[in-house]
Image 1 (cartoon, one colour):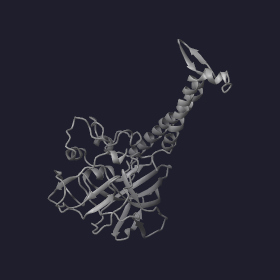
Image 2: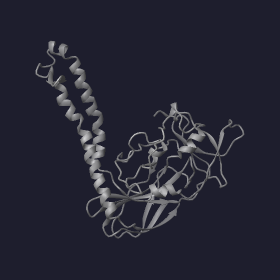
Image 3: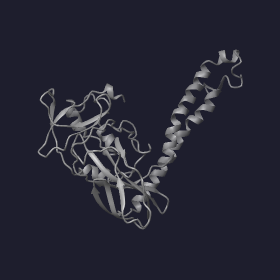
Image 4: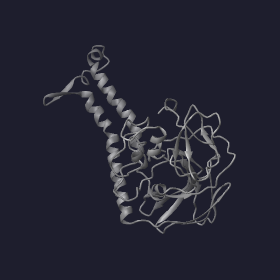
Length: 342
């Protein structure tokens, strides 16, 4: 989506709680998130009422806390193959439409030209070579989804205990004084990351002065009538598949990425390490802020491997104190909402 073609949303937030210190991430001609006080020369803006807190909302504790299964690597391979296989299929149909001229000029052998008749229909010969290749990413996705479903069912049948982690937040990052993993898990690496979660659909529509059930705003789909699967699908901002196929479970076992995401460096978690410092991203981000429109969320992510070879992630929320006098961050780090994306 082109950010310059989407109107900027500006509202006045009314809350009984103390507002966070001002911050600005991004620029006016790109994606931008800004929280500031009202100015005398501000144009007239709509007002919304919502809670502002430094503690995460229950929804985030359900979707970004605990153990999550790493999606099968075949998902990423299949996504990379979609574009070349579609191009191959289009080229095959294009060449078939120009076959008489290409054959007369000697650019195409007659053995590749023409069609095969199957029943009452004719099928281009080139299609028999291009279509099986076109089906490869679809087959890969099916295999990967079946593997993910099997791993999720195994996790449900044999859940993993939570690790014991003692975290201490300081100015340079988050210090882990102790990380004790379950007996059947081995920690590989971890990092501290920050991002901005998907805003609540009702508040977005209220800020845009739109009504539910009418034409949705740019970048949003019609609200789904089904139960919650992922935050993006329910809120209408996850147009298309955000995560691989989940199983029926009270908690989603595949972690949906934050659309705005700025991670720190990975830190190796060797056995016997007593103190580990997780440094944050290079940019100076604001502390933990939670509201219906803007929610700045900090968390620790630990990658681990189960005894059966299943790669998993442990996600633990971190409450960072407010930061004042922040310098503006020039670029808002927007990323894909797909779980298999790097």
